[in-house]
Image (cartoon, rainbow, N blue to C red):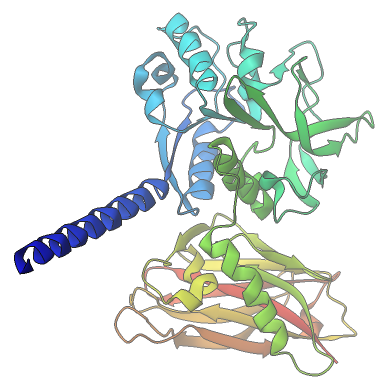
Amino acid sequence: MIIELLDRKYLLVCAVFVLLLWMTTQGTAEEKPVRVMIVTGVDYPGHPWRTQAVELRKALATEPRLDVRLVEDVEIFGTDMIFDYDVLMMNFKNYEPLKREESAKTNLLRFMAEGGGMMCFHFTGGAFQDWPDFARIVGRVWNPELRGHDPYQEFTIRVKQKEHPIMRGVSDFKITDELYTCLIGQKEIDVLADAVSSVDGETYPMVFTYTEGKGRGFYTVLGHDAKAFEAPELAVILRNAALWCAAKDAQPSAATTAAPSRVDEIKSTLGAGEKLLAYIDCGGDVKVDEGLKITALGELETYCFASVVPAGLTSQASVLFAKESVSFLIEGLDRAKKYRLNVVWWDCDANGRVQSLIVRSPDESQVRILRPGRALPDYMESKSPPQTVSVALPMTYVRDGKLRLDVKNEAGPNAVVSEIWITELP
């Protein structure tokens, strides 16, 4: 009897172990990253396709659920390799047939028919120009007989469906880009954002989705060059779109989820009569514009230390960085008011960074060091938390409501910024 009871207990333990192992395996399978392949390598000579590709990869790579690969050879469409990916992102315009043209066409149609996600970028609608079925793959195609686009300039993107997973966290925004007016097609599309031409006054789709077979498709005509990516909303849209195309409807990532609570946390610490006017989670998705606008300047890169920092520091884990300095333009300032600037930085990977904080008038006529070079707290060795530098903005340096801020690298590999926000003082 005792042996029989022990056997039963042993079998029960084994059964529980197998169940737990199965549950663990299931959880791991669900957490597999979405595999995205960006395909480029040839384009209209006026399009800097390599610059575009680098910006696309940077934009997508900050989302931890995306595993991004960049391929500079459109011939890959003629191979079975594309079926190893969940989402294909096309950024090219071919003027010559592919070596495996028919295989490429068959593969692209099959990819979407079987549930693959398709992301189309900028001039992709001009690819495979003589293939009638290409409209099924991209939703809209280029008509060379139409006017191509408005002059390269700043214009406003109007968000039409704020609740759509791709547009989650995005409001109307300005971008310096080409407003395309040259796409045509009969396929049913769902317009998520549009813009009004300054030339003919007509409205044109800037971001839209469609379906083909079991697959989901996304197209944005934005992204002529690196300048377009200075509008942080474009990167947010692209990350959301990659998840949506993979049928993982853009639930906010850990970095995105933490940032709104971080904004609430900041607001809860404000003094009587003090108002939060602008906030940026540098390298992240959340941006607050409530009276002021902060824009990152120049060729900046992003990185996220989320895998090595405590769970409560998610927003501070993402950074913007550059070799010499990380610069911002602050707009909408009123010289009759008082503002406080807050910058969060730290030497998370313990590389001996020393930084200074400098403001200057946009015309460069006045420069002031707000904080001289100081060593940043590190986390990897000393476990020091991020540091907030809080200073009053010198309003005499403001010109036409604008002021430039430089976070300058004094020692170490580069300058880094985690967060920046501005409050109005009573």
